[in-house]
Length: 275
Ligand SMILES: Nc1ncnc2c1ncn2[C@@H]1O[C@H](COP(=O)(O)OP(=O)(O)OP(=O)(O)O)[C@@H](O)[C@H]1O
Image (cartoon, rainbow, N blue to C red):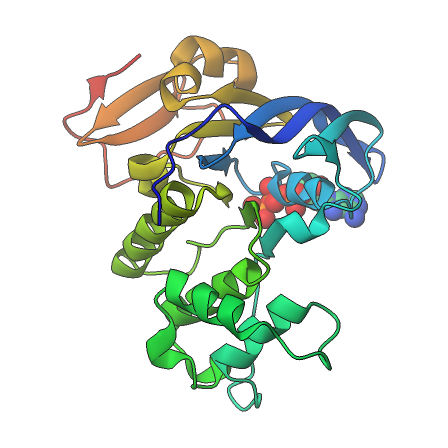
């Protein structure tokens, strides 16, 4: 399989997107472009609007202003080009559904009665290294295996854009690292554009090409060095913050500790300023 480098072919273009929900401006003038074969993170605290943005890209959340283009077209008619892994997935342990069945359902979509493309199902299982548990019930798998099974489900229609809503949230460190590595491989080897939401960008840094950092409904977008800078983040937060680097991890802290951001209690020592 050829390896893809990140290209300048736009797969997703979000321009000046504004979304109001329940009388509140949840997203305000969001603009960014994701290219083919890139890995991007959509970072924000609880309630920042990450899921709302993914739902807008999927065409299930109406917006008031702006535009979203997938492969140069409106999302309507392009849904088969998008794989989606939602945030909360719980499988009953006794659900009579094997991993292979779940992936086949992803391949056939709603038409479960149609035969699935077995080669596409096998490719999706292989892409996430799920062959060894393909015949096991999904409800009996570990959290990390379930996450890989639902990603295979999303990959079964060979999408060009893969959206994952907090896929690392319930994984231990080792499973999260394996999943991050896998997402990098999907982007580089298969040319899929991957967009991952998370609260913490650090686990994703090794594979990240692009960052969309959401605060209070507004976003800064670009590569990590362009976004994670105190001048950019000062504007976004509306108060002074500092960016610290500690053993390859990035920390964003308020200059005045009374203000908003949470300071992780385990990383207070030996911090060097990074701008
Ligand atoms: N249907 C709705 N009506 C009104 N407000 C909503 C609706 N859906 C979401 N919201 C609000 O929009 C804001 C953004 O929600 P969203 O779920 O997009 O955030 P998030 O960044 O994904 O959060 P989390 O990290 O907690 O999943 C929140 O304040 C939420 O309460």
